[in-house]
Length: 168
Image 1 (cartoon, rainbow, N blue to C red):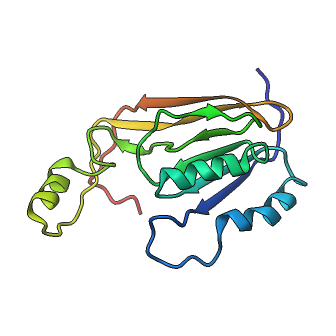
Image 2: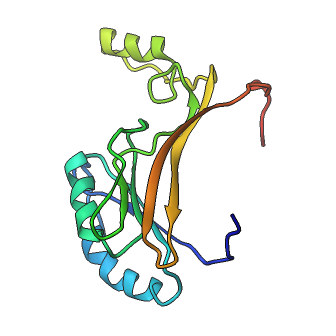
């Protein structure tokens, strides 16, 4: 199916709950002016909400229902099973997952992460590249910028890259 060329706005917000640092802006208050401005440019507005707690993510979902196309949570490094379309046409999910090794602890080598818990001694985490996987969502969006479907994806990737080289 052909897709028309359209502008898409992407907003990245940082949640407040569960963080010990002070935030300069409340993401809920910041959005009012921002959405008014962006809605003049496009009907498709995607929000990446990088937040720790599920409660804060779900609150943001309902706060933005009908105002944006989708609110997708990040930070947890896990693809969650709660994808839905809210009554106002906003697609939501608490965790969009990540790209990286499938057999891992959030992309890190399990043995090291287990040892850190058992010994209570800090050790440098190490990224694992075993069994690479792309996780995320696919959205279908109507002409009014409302989501009509949200589908989670897990795609296993062929691993033919040398991870020992510097990519710089």
